[in-house]
Amino acid sequence: MSLIFDISAPGKNKLRLPESDPSYLSDIPPEMLNAGLDLADVGEAELVRYYTGLSRMNFGVDTGMYPLGSCTMKYNPKINEKIASMDEFAGAHPLAGPEMLQGALEVAHDLADYLCRLTGMGAFSLAPAAGAHGELSGVMIMKKYFEKKGESRGTVIIPDSAHGTNPASVAMCGYEVKEVPSTPDGDVDIRALSAMLDGSVAGMMLTSPNTLGLFDRNIRAIADLLHKNGSLFYGDGANLNAVIGTAKMRDMGFDIMHVNLHKTFSTPHGGGGPGSGPVGVADFLAPYIPSPVIVKKGETYLLDHDRPDSIGRVHSFFGNFLVALRAYAYISMLGFDGLRDVSRTAVLNANYLMSRLKSVYNLPIDRTCMHEFVLNDKDVPNGLTTNDIAKRLLDYGFHAPTVYFPLLIHGAMMIEPTETESKSSLDDFIAVMKKIREEAQSRPDLVKNAPLTTPVKRVDAVAAARKPVLKWTR
Ligand SMILES: *Cc1c(COP(=O)(O)O)cnc(C)c1O
Image 1 (cartoon, rainbow, N blue to C red):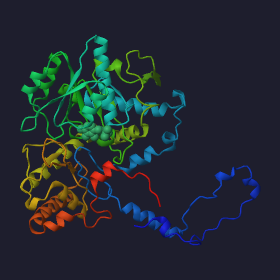
Image 2 (image 1 turned 180 degrees about the horizontal axis):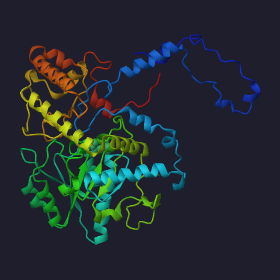
Image 3 (image 1 turned 90 degrees about the vertical axis):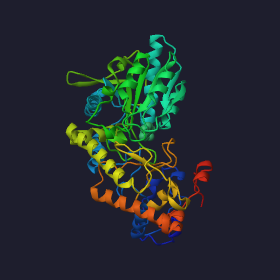
Image 4 (image 1 turned 60 degrees about the vertical axis):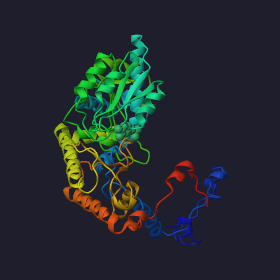
């Protein structure tokens, strides 16, 4: 596709504004007038077609199924966008005092309350701006807790299946990361864990259900081991979509957790945000959550800054409030029963795909999954790999699954359909995955050179990461 300047030619834009009275312009500094401003000269129809064309070069959840495991790319109801753009919310000035922000504070307060009821936690702060930021805040809470107790514990245990943000958050708080292996069928190796526990272990960070899409069958035993050791149990709640309304993280034994509102509670994400990663804690850790905390006194919402044990501010103002607002709208509309249907349907959809695809691709861990599952490229003919399959999917109008993650499965394809896909779109996906497997046998060239139909073909991903070109020069 060409640039807008390539289709620009002098005089194409027939729109002429009336001459303005030059006396109005005299106060405006000349550099602010459009002298030197390089605008394309095109007509309106051309302009609209140009940008519509650009928008169609992209793939989004509004254009097709987006089975990107771990990311929970569900369809996001458009009403949430409408609510988030209401002037009463979007136009609220962050420096306005609580007396002028009662409605917004009520939303934030009640959302924190919903999250407590859905997870069993005692307190939530909406301040963190994303999952990773929620982790960082949660680990800071862990650190503060031990500081207060006068205990010095220097390590945090993380399983080998963990999301990369987990060790990063732990390391940023000055802890040493120790890795616990998984068993061949995807649970934490509980014997190895027991052997690692001693007075140096501040806690363990575990995603539940885990990053293989599996519910750890020993979750309570893991929690008990940690608690007996005086350690805290941190739950990465990014996969909450699998259990929301069905099981509570506190009941599994977690003391601290974060929620990815942009995943579970429907905010369009990808491409860098905005997101929101509220951090939640059990009652005994409530004094440590970020300040200020929104409290309700009578019918009035106030900001409580008097929190001596708090880890302090982790974000300006109230975090990414409009993401919280979308989550509030989503939860209010579905109700807790509706949320239970969400998780059950997400799990059903994933198991349907898994059971239909396991005869087509290798399924390294074959047991009932939660909201996602992992296939790999073992035995795909002609040396074709996960990368080739992912690229070929684009030709058939599907976004690729998450590939090569988690790291402990060689050539992983991590598939998460979410609850918003219909049976017919799941069946289309199955048919295409089968077709690609057949092509790998009969027309390996097609798969090897895919994508053939997208605006951008195979890019050099390594060069793109190592030598990013962030500035466009004409
Ligand atoms: C997405 C995700 C994260 C990080 O969340 P961000 O909002 O991207 O920072 C952490 N853990 C798991 C398991 C995730 O899927």
